[in-house]
Image 1 (spheres, rainbow, N blue to C red):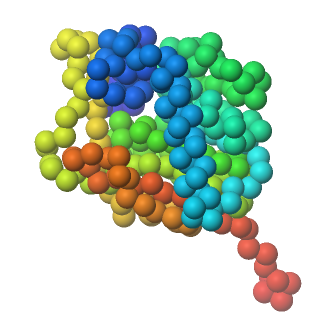
Image 2: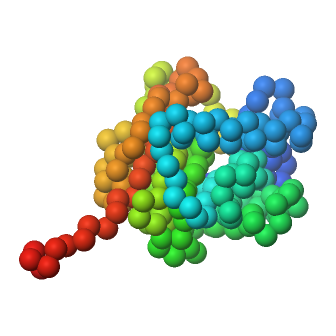
Length: 243
């Protein structure tokens, strides 16, 4: 799926069934998600993330956070309990519009529609923390790797990127994908993997170092998936004698 078609699919999913498209829990398709339960699941994820970082001694410096692939703000809202300001970014204008309506944190949370395969709307070093989960799996590896490099560019030195990404198919060709509603209707989700070696190369090339990697226990039967916590390396001070 090329990038423009990816955008159109998520525009259409955002118009027709946004909560299910974001979190495809059984029995929630067709507008059946309870909104309170949907956002509560984001709060629970935020509590898990905070505990996971603390468990592994990962300290995030003070500053703003970016939530990539924010949808209607399920996790973005939860991150507002951890950071002074959070920016949610999504490719789908309908998702972003709905996220703004559901925002319960005022100006501390902002939402941006980004329809580019980069994050050039933001300057280098804009954030202390960048986050994405159950997002990169829906795009080809070339786009996922491009965004990983962008997450690192956007971090200030010492900042942390936390992301989840599938790295291999455990049962090649057997993984289910959400089908199009009709043959001509662009309302479906593709699933992709990004090889772990390529992920690690992108991290190193972007000035990052892996602080923690852990296999994702929620990945299911078809994928091998990992959580990564990556620190942006501090700039090295060159002694006068080496200049």
